[in-house]
Length: 344
Image (tube, rainbow, N blue to C red; front, side, top):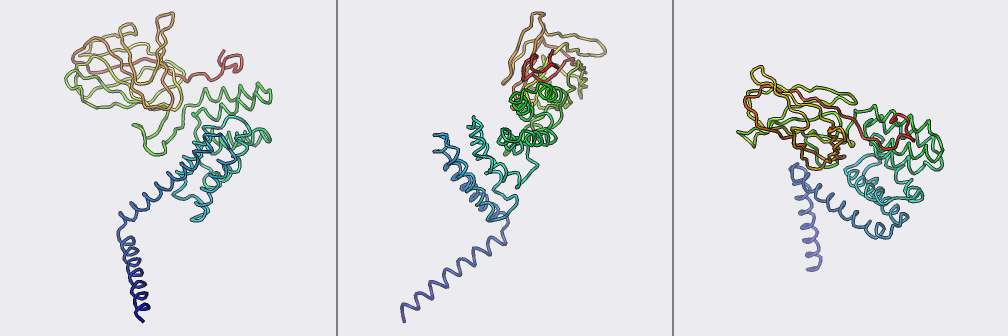
């Protein structure tokens, strides 16, 4: 009798704790979201750790099975997109980063196909799937490449894969078609998985200018503008008030490698013009590289997919009201001119 009483008390205690916990989570939205987020983080970490052995030995059969298990767990909650998709994306991206041979990609084809079923609006899902089927059905692969280009026209991965396919099929016309398209496209962007950039996404259109104010070095007044591709352009910046300065900072978060050629900086102070050319500048950056040409001009190579700051410095100037910055910007080539005739 005493034993059954203990069982009954234990049952009611467990039931009471479950009831309190469920009620607490149902009423407290913030704590519910926090607990679920922490569980997902731990689960994602666990799934990534299970990939370690397969990544070390480069066994894509093992890696495919581990990713498939991850996807099946997600499908138990919903057949469509779930909160697990970012974690699955990150795990798949890690595995793809180790893939080299066609066989590596073939072993992951089923994974890519399932990811497209989750969400066919994601750029890299189409790229990965196209690569995996490029040996058996290159026309279908090109269809997915074109879908990826429509999603983000300025990213380079789709074009590089099209070039790879054209090489395998000895089709120079196909290669040049995609070279021309890549060279002309400047729109599109890439939103980081976890943290946005200064511009929210990586893109080739936007940049900010910040004056290096001699009186207030911590001032962060940005003036925004948009790049114009493949032609010399003069960008005009009018300051809120007259400023003492010794240069400017250009902030950008490029989607692809860019070449900037700065022609001239023209300042205005109470109607007077002050010209600064490339020989009057010192240039430094966080990630970019400088090529000094034989004609004394400078090409600034802006690194891909990194928030960048170009620091242009010159002599100190006072009471500046306006700046006209003349420069040319274009995307770097990813083949030589013998392969893509557009570069001749």
